[in-house]
Image 1 (spheres, rainbow, N blue to C red):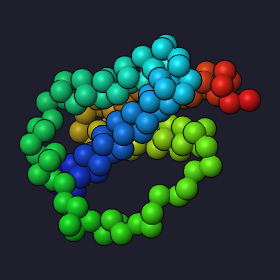
Image 2: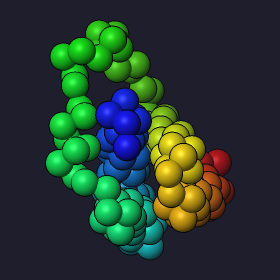
Image 3: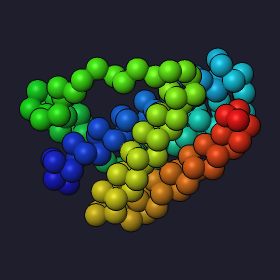
Image 4: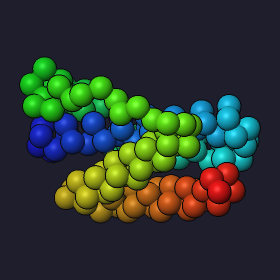
Length: 137
């Protein structure tokens, strides 16, 4: 697989897992919702299992990472969020977008893996809707 595509996959794997971890901590420590916590954790772990099953070489992923040459690392500081709800929404959105990118780029070489990321993306949509209806009124 092309090194540039591996970079895209690497960064989006990281984004998706980071976003899920933030949402998981909100579900655990703020919402005290063990079911949501478990579902978010499960999504995060499914990403890892998909990559393992894809036979994608983890070493090649890490080697493709090139922060020093990344043209977009000089972003301004994080946008200040007004509350934990805005943090949750920003991170669930980040997760869904990353899963979509993974779906698109794996579709170039492995449609089965692409479908798995699509399934995860729709699981994230459903979980977001359930949590929104329950906690964000």
